[in-house]
Image (cartoon, rainbow, N blue to C red; front, side, top):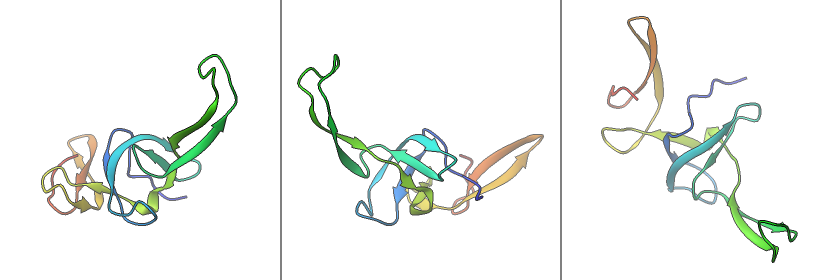
Length: 104
């Protein structure tokens, strides 16, 4: 099992797939499957039956999970993709961007 270095709320860059080059905010992380749902990325059409929320039913577009190996965190300083490292700040373990050394 790989270590997931991406968390909910992070801004990520898509490195591979149909949405390569796009950036977006992580909405949720599915730890068991090593996947993340990113805002505006990997959009799929879902067919829904009529219900109280959608009385008409029909087709809705929504984000599908994308594998975390295809995502890279955006460096807060340079706004470019970077790898993530961990270091100890006193007793606290913090993430930092490997490119700039900036704390995330």
